[in-house]
Image 1 (cartoon, rainbow, N blue to C red):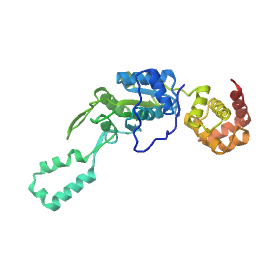
Image 2 (spheres, rainbow, N blue to C red):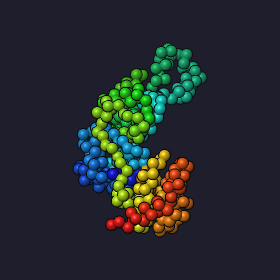
Image 3 (tube, helix red, strand yellow):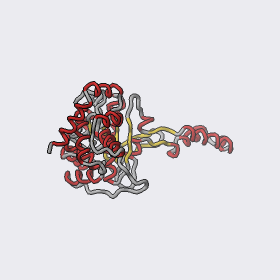
Image 4 (cartoon, helix red, strand yellow):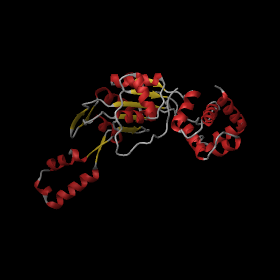
Length: 322
């Protein structure tokens, strides 16, 4: 039962102070101060990943806060977040490195125009095209490239969307934390990045990759924790309304919807209600604002068929339980 999702406000150009993460309690406290409520299990997994320098694989349904955890972790460490969004067909040119062909072409044309090309051997001119200045560093190469300051947080998002070949290559990178660019040489991490992989479990991640990682299943938060998340992230909302919203979302997640709402949707709903000046839920309010929490027409129809009155009733019942 874990933390909050959604985008946290950050000051542009201002590095966050590096928090102490020397214990599970410190990790939990630092995440909470940054707006993410993690239970002891998740905080322990994060602490062990930091201490043992092991990748952390987070699995769970969409919207439970897996991606946001990596973002917040970068904030509390005062380090760069490098995000690799996986998708079907992703390969090295999108994930590791590529060559800036347009700049290489401009270099050739400049050499020809100046007459420099005529005075150089073909092999020498070709070697110039594969200089580091023409190298485009993608996420994986950027993450292991030597740097000053704290090691970055590398977020490998939705690894379950990538294919087997890319997963095998990724396993090799995470084992050695080095990447060879044949034309330039081998890059090795002087400080191992903090690696967070997420999976919505659209397919099973291979055992070899799982063995390389620490693992944690991230669930939707329980009712009381979700109330705490809403109160933390939407402080202008009255506690009674926060409890009603959490109760209504709890009920929605039992309706076998096509896309059950995640924590981010709970926060969005509470924020929208607060903006409208709503102090408590009723059927009319739920019908008019349901689009902030449910994003598919079929889910709206299912809620209407099940009865909005029942949803409101459940929200009120949960809100009155101490």
